[in-house]
Structures are given as C-alpha cells and as structure tokens.
Image 1 (cartoon, rainbow, N blue to C red):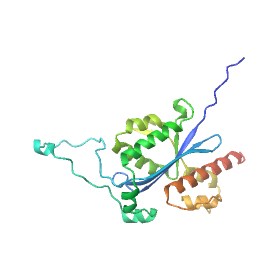
Image 2: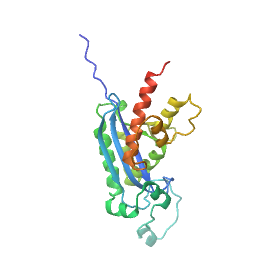
Image 3: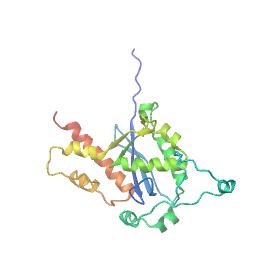
Image 4: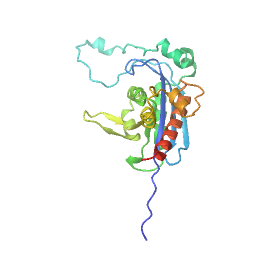
Length: 238
C-alpha cells in the first residue's frame, strides 16, 4: 500500500497599509490590516488590524559614514526626528493625528504582532508553505512592512516566517501576488481598460468596496479580486 501523501495547505496574507506619505524611507505607517486566506478554499481564517501610534526615525541598521565624535557627543541621547505625516495622505485615508495618538499601538508592538500573525497563518510545515503576501500594488506596502520590521529590530524574524528568497545583494525579497498583475491578465484583451486602480478593478468585477482607503476594507476587496481573477483565469479557454 502506497504511503499516504499529506496534502499541503498553501496560504496568503492580504496586506494593506495606510501611510503618512509615499516614501517608505521618510513617511510613517499609520494603519495596517492583514487577512490570512487559504488558497484551496479562499477562506479567510484570521484577521489583524491596528492604527499605529506616531513614532520617530529609528536606527535602521544601514551603513553610516564614520564621523569623529567627542565622548560627550557619544553619550548624548540620539535626537528624536519624527517621521513625516503629510496632510494630503492623512486626508486621503481619513486618519487624523489625534486618532493615532489615542488609538494607535506602539510601532514595535505592531511589528511583533505581525510576526505572530504570520507564524500562526502557516497551516502546513515546510518553506514552500510559508505565507505569501497579496496586495494591490503590493510592492508599495512591502516597503513600509520592511520599514516596520527594520525599525522594530525584527528583520531576521520577518525573513523566517514569510515566503521569500535572498537576492544577489543579500537582501530578503518576500514572495507576493499583485492584483494589478492579475487584473492585467484578465483584462489584457480589452483595450478600453487603461487603469487598474483598486476601486475600478473591483467595480469591473462586480465587487463591493464600501470604505476605500481604510486598510481592512482594501484588503477585503483585494482578496475578492484575487478570488475572482483566479476563477476567470482558470475557466478561460486555452
């Protein structure tokens, strides 16, 4: 009798950030939402979301130019430099600084909770079963996720729990699925489709998006787009 083969369960984590601007090197994360989903059933089985309290720039472990300093200068506390919170970005997401101060969670705590979320999302053992990121223009969000992990000192843990590979330069690159690419695969034959914004793609596919630019609502719409696109691609004629 042939040995029974264990079925692997592959999972994705839908990711969306709201931020204080477009540059992940200068601007803060203001809200994060995660949803864990099984690829065999597209069932969402875990969720996480949080506003992130205001924080300053951290030592990201990047190489710095050596500067001679006196002992007094070396003993001084590093100067607090706030991250950027551009008003245009705050208005876009309807997030206020008061909300972040009163409802926000410490940035390092959020990073730790993201690691814990990814760990419990892996439903089968093995590197190939680590969760893969899913998002709309997800490389934007990955930049802020890398900022969060680096500032919290959790880069090594991040590399252990998410699917990914080390590139030529020795940097970890997480594996991801971008719904913009899925939309292009589905609508490549339609010359009238010239934009793949989340709201427009959702509307074309008949998906409701009740609260655009709220991180959790955007993740829900993103995963629904992934479901519909995968079904359309699976059933399309070869």
